[in-house]
Length: 259
Image 1 (cartoon, rainbow, N blue to C red):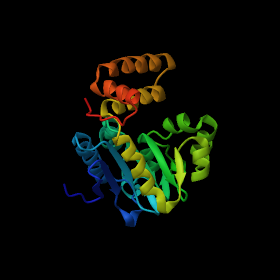
Image 2: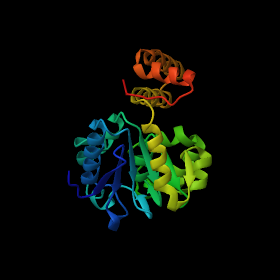
Image 3: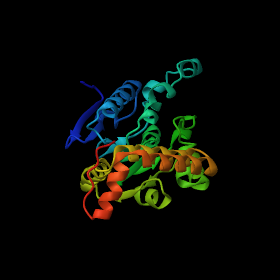
Image 4: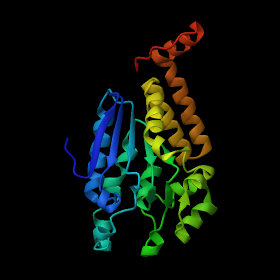
């Protein structure tokens, strides 16, 4: 499919890569871009050869926020009546395959929120994260007041949301917002390597692992423990569980078939 605001390609026919592509606007997220992103995510999710998806931007900006030139014209009836953000931004939550954000440069406002919607973030050493919406007379609207506290804690999230200060990559790693920080020129190679590692594992177990961690992030401990236990039990019905354990006992590489 031809896209206007994103680019897509695959790595080794296993990893789907989506690059945000509005360079003149530092990849500001408009409705059209988010619609295309959703289409690309769904296409890779439906492709049986793809095991993991990567979302990235440019060296200068992952995404410097939502498109304020478009948003400034909206009224309450526009955003509420058209279910702004919910309709076009939440598709990423429907994707079963792991989605990694490879972030360099600015990830601000909606860009930071998009990165947090991914399953984990690998950041370049020049990455900067922030929720500056308060400067515009609004608050984060795509999860910034909800996912950020869960990732970095209440105090640091309050600091960022109320003062609009940016967090650099080192602080983001220490705070738990990103999983790891790498040199800028190594960002994509490190991210693809992580994605390829995920692709090497049985897909049913990957699905279950992702779903279980998401339940921990969004629900109570007791509910999450029960969900994890049931998925753990269910995986004993798969061929890949039998193969994986037998390969371990045989001291040989496992040959998974995603069954």
